[in-house]
Length: 260
Image 1 (cartoon, rainbow, N blue to C red):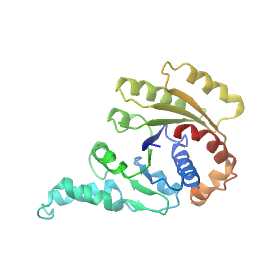
Image 2: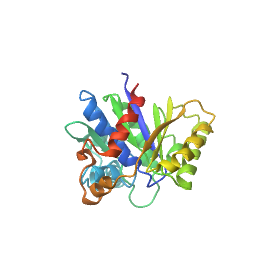
Image 3: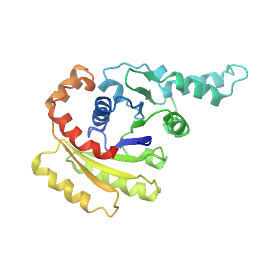
Image 4: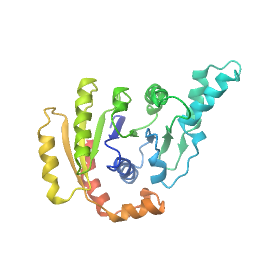
């Protein structure tokens, strides 16, 4: 299988970060030879929490860029090294290497200014870093700003997660509209309904059928699950979720379509 970049997006709170870790768990269990990179591009950095990890700000891309800005302001960059060279080296050093995957956390920006600078860095380094991995999983920020910045450029598959809410559906629709407006050419756009009861599934099925894009497909539904909530509250890694967990079993039964 060729190397792939797969991005998880959607409204805040719909469970996209949890499903990103589900995908990581699925890959580790079923494709042990894959080299996997997880990029947490959300300023809230939920991935580390879901993995039961504590990552200080200084070890995120946001922390690295903040320190670089301070050094540039104080004219204290090492001699003979450009800021781009230093930044690239620092970002590679910030990769968290686990047994079965590597993790890169973008983090937030600090002080004045917006998140645009960090996003521009992500676009620059993503292609270079991802060449070293079989699969790159991106957990994107909530909302739509990153699409306007084309942070998802060159992503193969986009997974949009929605819950059974008006705002979840609205964000899903806007993401698909914006991907057209910005000519972001995803091979597939997959929709996952998270925390849907059987009675509400038909609403999402009808919504997806209304899309005119042939590459927009309903991947399936994930049920509400109290065990996941317990893991989140206690701080236990989602990777340790039992294999027979109902939500994970359902996810495993539908996600293989992405890898075909």
